[in-house]
Image 1 (cartoon, rainbow, N blue to C red):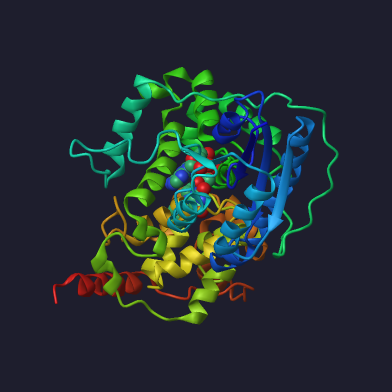
Image 2: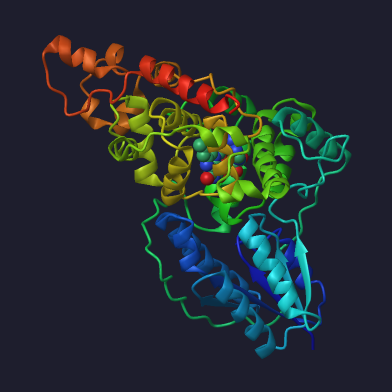
Length: 472
Ligand code: FAD
């Protein structure tokens, strides 16, 4: 009997899992599943303890749901990718594996690891990879010159055209392949864990699908109108599931089109579809420009910006103590929940880079160390966008004013008051500049004064970018 091995990585679901479905296609084959945890690798890449905990919880459920189908999931912990290659080789030999199925990961280290695995397994094991975590494979949406787009809007147009020609299909969860198996709870990872707020992010594939359905049932117009206001739960909050592959982008697309078929023609629901395409864009970019995975800016001259090495200010930003209420409330949301609203990710990233003139890579790393939805492609894309170092970058002279951003997107200060209880008493008029109120009242607030003057910081940042841009 043939033995098929499915190597799970960031595709922790049984439904619409291309590698799992392909492995199960032959009814006569024995199917086994392996997950290899690499805590040392996670440490090097700042995986957040919350995301590690979320991963472990999903692995537990995945093990149960596979066991109900008679499929065994083996979990192994090794240090890093090198050790995982060795382990996989031994595992294939000991289990007499004929064929290995896996879903591609697009980060450069992961791609190099997979290439090494294919090489080491040689002819003994047939390896099959699948473009599962994307709607369309990287490299398949290109300009007339067969190059990857450097700007989002034309990419998005070409992408939608491809979808209009034919949608990527979802595949079903595998049927039962034998008697249900008895399983033992997996050992915790050798990695710090941090409690996940399961009211915000309930664990499991079913919970994720329920969240998706509920979100798509809402009038699409609500998303378009509400998605920029952090005090409203206006977005799907599906990113932690998409990051670990607990749901697939195809499931998102099909559910969206079921409720809002006109989304693909630019009608209701198109705004959310556009966000899913941003996710694709950044994944496709990683494959076209692997240097992005190695913390290189897309625009080379931006590497010459002379960043400030200011540990104190970096810490103030991390802790949500900059004196700019919208920035601080956002950072506290991140630290407390592992998630931050998209508008605020842009605001705090702009603040770190353009107000404090701190290297965007410090922010990128800090985000990864906190986010429950940490995803190299989206995080790097977001940071390079904010820092104006990336593709499709806002020109470097476009700098968010943190106070007016707060006034526009949290006008009443509801979000700020939720995360900064020390500002509860400050009247609405002063919520975005509480120090003015404190001075007027001759009160001392348990809240810092702004750590920079935005106008002066703006001038200094423009000068630093201009100096870096000058030819030598
Ligand atoms: P929704 O608005 O409901 O969007 C649906 C899905 O589309 C999201 O779950 C996400 O998978 C995708 N998406 C939405 N916006 C973007 C975007 N701008 N770029 C890429 N994908 C997008 N997203 C991550 O998943 N992981 C990250 O590590 C991450 N880091 C970011 C860092 C910065 C500086 C910025 C500006 C953005 C970052 N984003 C990241 C993108 C975005 O902020 C989140 O995907 C979004 O806030 C998640 O909330 P949601 O699921 O409610 O999104």
